[in-house]
Length: 244
Image 1 (tube, rainbow, N blue to C red):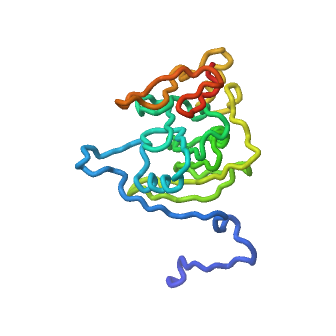
Image 2: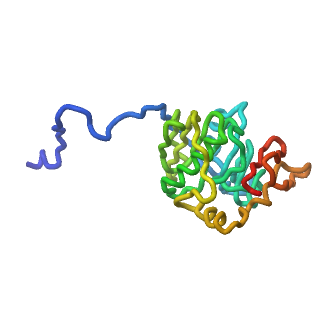
Image 3: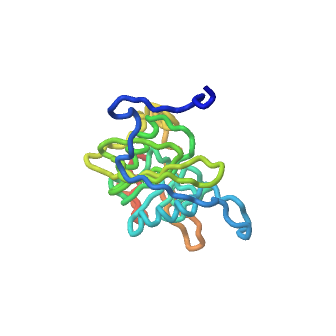
C-alpha cells in the first residue's frame, strides 16, 4: 500500500489534450541580469527604463527605423511621449490619444505601467498605436495580450528580469490593412481615458493641448510649440488637429 500511495498513472483517451499546445509563433526566452546599475554610477535604481538586455533587443529590432514610445519614461532612443513632464519627453501627451498622423512611424513601443488593464483599455491602446505605425507595434508588460487580424502576433519573448521579479512579455505585432481608426474623446468605454469623454461633453480642451514639447535646445532644454492646426509640424512630427 505504501509503495503506491500518491503514485501518478496517466490514463487518458486518445485525442487532443484540451489547453495543451505549442505556440503558433516563435517565442524566445530573454534572460536579463540585474536591472540595477553598478554602485560606481551613484545610484542603485533606474526606474522607468528598460532593462539593458531588453533595450539592446529593441535597438536591434528597430535599427534603421523610426520609433515612438507612447509611454516614454526614461527611454533614450526614438521619439518619447509621456504624460509626466518630469520624464522630460519630446512630447507631453497621452498614449490613448497620440497626436500623430496615420503611418507616422515605422514602429510604436508600448511599455505601460504594470497594472492589470481591462480589455477595453488594451484595445484602445492597440488601435491608437496601429494607426500611427507603418510596420510593427511592440508591447512590453507583465500580461500577455491578444490582438486581432489587423494586428497579428508575429514574434514574442518571455523575459526574466531578475530574482523575485515578475516575468515580462515582449510581443511584436505586425500592422496590417485595413486599420481601425483610434478612439476619440466620447468613444472610450472603460479605463482612465474615460476622463476625455467627460471633457469632450463639457467642451473643455485636453489637459496637455498647450504643452506639447518638441525637440530640445542646444543646452538640452525642451522647447514648446503650439498644437493648433492640422498642418502644424515641428521637426517632422505631425501634431494633429484634435487639440484645437
